[in-house]
Length: 207
Image (cartoon, rainbow, N blue to C red; front, top):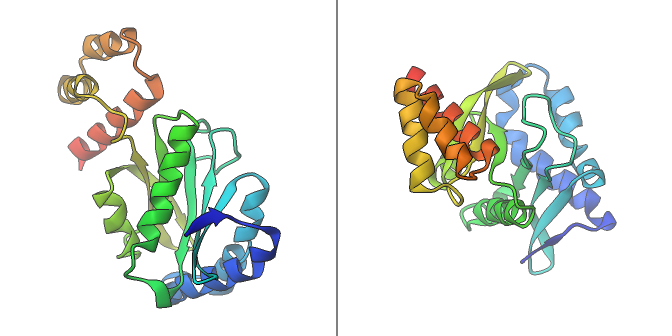
């Protein structure tokens, strides 16, 4: 079951966040600093929405959805909603909890009428990253390293893009055809959605 967090969930959220990240200790150059930041996850509820996953009355996962107007790291477009701190209790893995929490964030982005939702992740997260890619997220560009670990920014626009937009993006990425791009905009498509797709197409062309 998914629900919004309550004030009395803070301790459980911190416990799960620390347990979820524990396997990555060797990768970060300053583990005490990383865990201190992870333990601040409940504070994201002040400007965003923390969603809780429960099973039998026990909290087994959580994620923060930061809406279009919420403050967010500078490497994200300020108008995009962002997924932060997806964590699942290691004992509850393999049950699709991470996907359910991510899908709930996508639903909230749709509720907020945002054509794009973004997150940042890293290749060391060998369960989360493939899940995001299967869900239709695409790598757009690199994000700043976190304590020596390289990160990348991912976006999902799959639920809202159309064949017409995809054609314009393909033309733009292939030939830098600004006319196709402008025609697509003139037909009323969201500029933010097109920009995200173009960035992704150009990233993959350069890779």
